[in-house]
Amino acid sequence: MTDITFEIKETLGILSESTKGWKKELNLVSWNGREPKYDIREWDPEHEKMGKGLTFSKDELEKLRDLLSGM
Image (tube, rainbow, N blue to C red):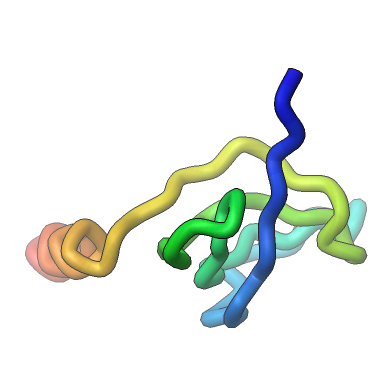
């Protein structure tokens, strides 16, 4: 199995925190050395382990913002 590398370039905000300390965050993350994307997922307190998440390009994130604004 191939190792996945990541680097959190910027933490943009915390959406929630579980009783175990994991935080659901919006971050700008570079996966496997690629161009950073906007990423929503849960992270352990040390940012070593993560849950499943979603990644967005800037255009996709702006579209999501527009959709949410219309709710």
